[in-house]
Image 1 (cartoon, rainbow, N blue to C red):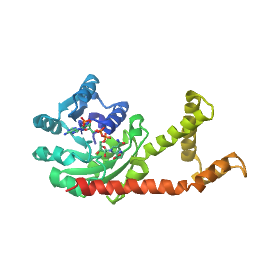
Image 2 (cartoon, rainbow, N blue to C red; image 1 turned 120 degrees about the vertical axis):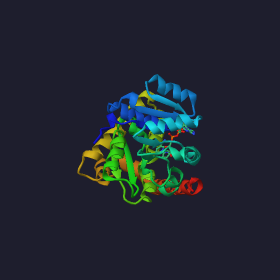
Image 3 (cartoon, rainbow, N blue to C red; image 1 turned 180 degrees about the horizontal axis):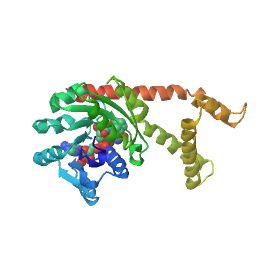
Image 4 (cartoon, rainbow, N blue to C red; image 1 turned 90 degrees about the horizontal axis):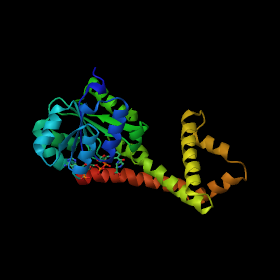
Amino acid sequence: MATTTSLNIAFIGGGNMASALIAGLLAKGQPTTLLHVVETNAEKLADFQAKGLNTYDANNIDDTKHAIEKADVVVLAVKPQVIKDVLLPVKDSWGEQVVISIAAGIGTDSLAEWLGPQVKLVRAMPNTPAMIQMGATGLYATAGVSEAEQQLAQQVMSAAGLVLWVDDEDLLHAVTAISGSAPAYFFYMLENMIATGEKLGLTQTQATALAMQTALGSAQMALTSHDTPAELRRKVTSPNGTTQAAIEVMDDKKMHQIIADAMLACEQRSRELSQAFGK
Ligand SMILES: NC(=O)C1=CN([C@@H]2O[C@H](COP(=O)(O)OP(=O)(O)OC[C@H]3O[C@@H](n4cnc5c(N)ncnc54)[C@H](OP(=O)(O)O)[C@@H]3O)[C@@H](O)[C@H]2O)C=CC1
Ligand SMILES: O=C(O)[C@@H]1CCC=N1
């Protein structure tokens, strides 16, 4: 089977998530000459062109079709709000390409209607740490996608980090809540820890270095330890000590409930996007 480095991969939409995935692919050795980006934004196109990628003006339907025709794999990386309008004008352009949609919420029933039922369709929910090959991606393949085509999609997305298949499309809403959107939860925690560190007298540089190294160390420890996160937490928490004082505030303010509510809101919003912008 072809490796990603011999595949033509086209991105329709060259924004934040496409840029993160492209960075992952480039780091894995994907030649720029085999990467294609279709975008409306001239500045973004110029940036990709300066890096040696092939670029196409999305305002020109023929240009978009040209990119699709060249590609073995096409990643749909536009906002859920516009994906239908992007796909319908190029419905007659699809051949053997494996199409990977990363649009949050938009179901394969809608996508198949806009692409045509013959298209080999995979949905993915990646996250932005893809940029440093530390991403986590949930994947779902529709019935018509062969084992080899699934492997192809997996190769493309695994350039970004961990990939994990779900066999029920509905679970992609949960994947969005636990990993797709979740880098933002951790960044939010870091932002606020750093701000409070400064209020406690540390410089911004000191607070940033200490908070970030602690996030990295904790994640690495949780990944490599035989202990569960709950056990690791207990090992930091001396009876009646400093950590207990902090955790008691989190418990009193029902932080566990805040985390659960936030993830449920995320999952629910993904379902709403599916209703609002699906067929
Ligand atoms: N960001 C994230 O962490 C994640 C995002 N996703 C999904 O990825 C998709 C993209 O999100 P994100 O990268 O954040 O969004 P961005 O807005 O950064 O990227 C979308 C890009 O598509 C461009 N665009 C708009 N219309 C068209 C068109 N007709 N043809 C081609 N390109 C067009 C936009 O240009 P312009 O700026 O000019 O409008 C923009 O550059 C979404 O569907 C989102 O749900 C999934 C997982 C994680
Ligand atoms: O916020 C969003 O809608 C996108 C999908 C997952 C992460 N970002």
